[in-house]
Image (cartoon, rainbow, N blue to C red; front, side, top):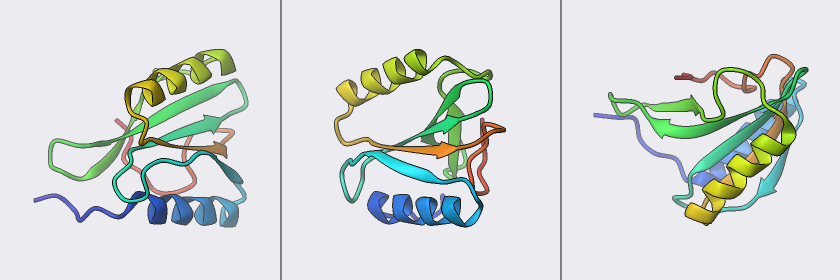
Length: 111
């Protein structure tokens, strides 16, 4: 049995607060469905960007997939990925964080 799901809007608010507290400011780039929208994180690092996509691991727990690959990509590549995903799922939330090490400002399982 997986962990309980939190409403997307509440989760995004929490993540932005945690980012601010950790010295990794964030910004809401796109508002999605308040209750059940998926979430994309854009991490702005030293050498480029990385987009993480919220997924469920095989055991049902929340996890993140490095959707743009293991290495930093150019801003144009990250923007193109986000645009494709939003076209496919208009309920997505998109949140960006300053992340020099390309890690989110909260504890996360990254696949």
